[in-house]
Length: 306
Image (cartoon, rainbow, N blue to C red; front, side):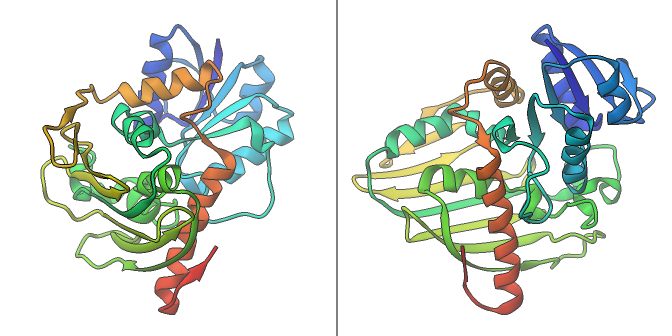
């Protein structure tokens, strides 16, 4: 398959390697001179060069809307996988056919999370707690954390959007958000312009009490990503870092994966049109709206409804 990869930073390079392993032919849009593939400086030039079976957008979040507009203007109508989050802010118009767009929330492809979705099917949800945190300077060893897009509000960085896997999967498991209140912002001495901490209390369609914390502050080596869910006849404790899932306090199930597994599985689903574990455009947009509502709730000291 002919795939056009837009953006060649760290996540773009990861996607490139995994696409190559699947035998895809890759063309890249990037100004990165070290890119070892056929490369164009802009989307228009790449799209006029040849036909593509799919397009993967791995640019900073703040550029996603512009990228989709450029695709429409160039007449591209194929499938698109766009890195999460979909946009930096909610939009009320669609610059590209939504049915053709999936958002790269690869954590949905983790077998631990798939197991949780299976276990919760048909049960009443009582409470849901999720936590993710990692000290931002740990993210890119050998690189100044102040130079990465996560540190820049203008580029669409910040813990709330950057770590929005939790905002996505809580809705995948507990239904769309209905209302939210929150506290957060930049609270540490990190030299960044983006937020480094948010705590949210959410009511979803299927769960009255959902609590989420996301942060750039956790000094635990490698960070932490965990959840606790109480449901009808079931209590779950999951840890994505260790791959352990405990049911009602019993001996945990073990999901041992290499770090590329969820990315590779996500690409397989996308390329083979298996959408059950993929995030749709509309679902991705709801996550952006939830993040924006959390910021509004914090600023106004109130609950914000969907």
